[in-house]
Length: 223
Ligand code: 9D3
Image 1 (cartoon, protein in one colour):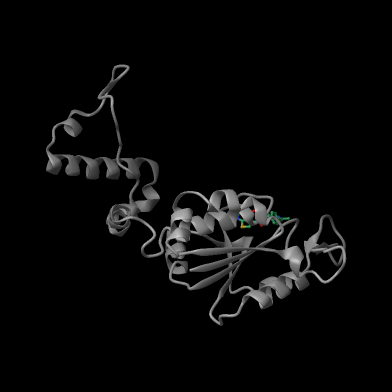
Image 2 (cartoon, protein in one colour):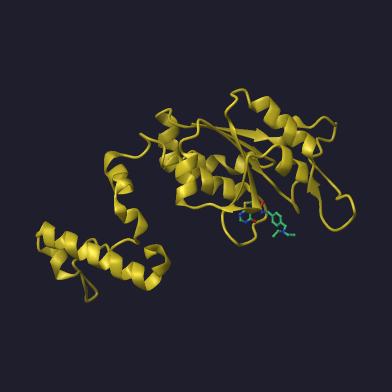
């Protein structure tokens, strides 16, 4: 998968993308991330990316020209999916991440300031995506979240063990309780069943506990 990210802050992405699963995905050539500074697509000497809103009001609006020019330069392959990260978008969930993981080329547009010129939304973006109902200062963190959620779903990115877990029904449940050594930590004991070596009984216990936790904390997931 190729992901182009159009942003005024390309540098904030690198430290995260160069670690963890995203680093592995890139080293395995399953994923290529290109960071595009929207200022590089401006036409004026001051490299201005925003302007005052028509009709007045507070704040600045990201201008259409640099964003359109960036996308037009990047979009060589016809089938690129252009995504605007915005508080108005549909909320990202696992199903949407799954769908996006099948795309060959994503172009992510990160808004800033009070918003983005409406013509970007109307005439450029194929999808508008939010990561939840809270206010961020820009689309950059949302783009990082989207890349993280999508990249781990690209075939061959995760190891066999994690992929198997991904396939199982347990994706719709919360995690069962996990423990590591010591078996007795300050008087708090690990459930005896986990020390028994009886794998069938352990499986049953874990399923039961996962269901119990889900019912208690996230009953909406069971519907
Ligand atoms: C004046 C109304 N504000 C909307 C609630 C304006 C506004 C606030 C914050 C416009 C843009 C932003 C910056 N946020 C994003 O670009 C953003 C975002 C978010 O704030 N929350 C969750 N997901 C996303 S995706 C992009």
